[in-house]
Length: 170
Image (cartoon, rainbow, N blue to C red; front, side, top):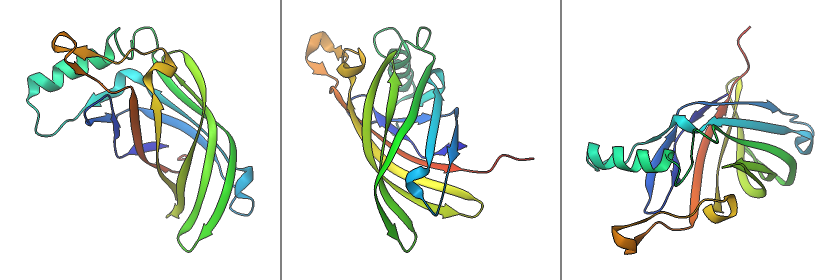
């Protein structure tokens, strides 16, 4: 499985790309509710893209994001998601709309999450698109304050994703 698209996170719409994503999908097109997914993101692979920002600003945001104040990638090297249920399945001409529930482990804190997902077959693979919002404080992360506290990063972050799962090569 690999990732296409970007994570939008950490305050004023920084654009973050996940470079190393792996996982497993068990998909049953006849009984979609029996399907499951697990994902693992290497936290150190999250990269600040931020078009229009200077290289220095991107490096500063990257260092803060990966450092002890936010993700602390040395202490928490992986971000994981494991599904626990597939609900509210609506067949569509191009695939399915559904709600995916699961457990997100971020910054060493595991929490239940649930979010809408658009799913469709694409060639030999399966494409999933959606977004989920979460609070950094729910995962033990204190939102960053800069400029003496006059600029604060929002607690709520939005993660948008576009993932293409493909069959393993034999």
